[in-house]
Image 1: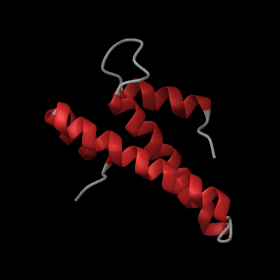
Image 2: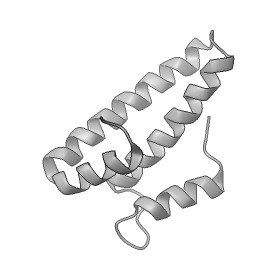
Image 3: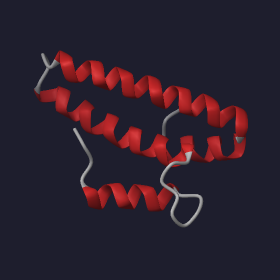
Image 4: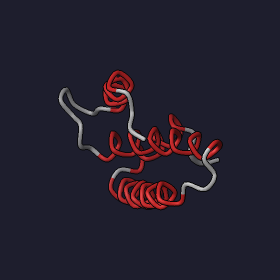
Length: 89
């Protein structure tokens, strides 16, 4: 499941570190989180969609690796991103 273009531009604008920033770890983590949330809602109605579930697991793993990278390189930004997205407790 992809993100609506309006929602995607809003997420990019909220997490961008520079004017035309679309590839920073913060933006990538936010976009992956949005896609993961959309797919999680999809699985409430389509419980046997195992092909999409594999894609979900791949996205979760990618987000985990990006979070680890951000944690080691810029801890302040890491803390801000997880707080804004509500990922860790």
